[in-house]
Length: 268
Image (cartoon, rainbow, N blue to C red; front, top):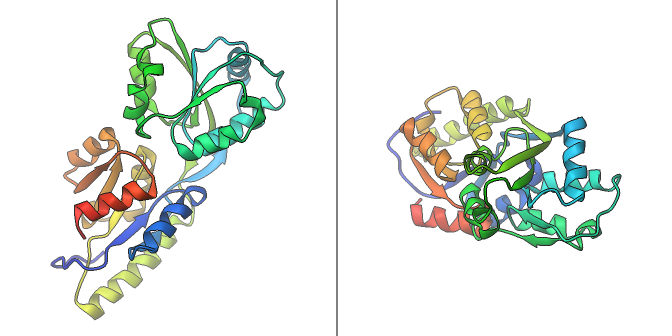
């Protein structure tokens, strides 16, 4: 992407969220005068679980875990689908949804009517770690996590460092969409053409919500990553980008309202 003296006007926001999760944010920002470019850096594909994972599910139903942590709506959907083919459980269970959309999926399923459904005050690894239901667990406790492949390592590492047994089920993989390269090239051509016509280039904002999204973004861009400014979810990602001397602003959750407010505070 061509770089010139930056003259800030209408902000450009690149939404790298998967198609299934991008719509509400894109619509919210567009309605408030922000130009949104949809460039998904993750595609969600289901994983086949094995004997161990089936055992975790049966152990959870039997009350062997102190808490179940569900880290996305997709994990909730796949996990609940698997529960439908297992014997029901009657006892009350603690189920922690990482955010509001995940909580909505869980609340709609009658299989969890006997469960205590809660969310952290801040929808992030740090918010989960700070929850009394997790922070108060002692060594020897057990936690089950429903997640995507490779997700929520910070949470797992924190719990395991405190002597808590963590078992995880990866319900889906997060892969790089094959069309991402062509989509990015097409956007670059249009963006650079407009920049030449107007004499202005804006440093777009890029949403980075996971380590996998950033890895894929770097593979697709293949040019100086500092041609962009980044909104990053959580301090771990912030440290990763700062180590590469990239301009980034920390966000604590992925709600459209929080992202919009952060963009406003950061300036256009």
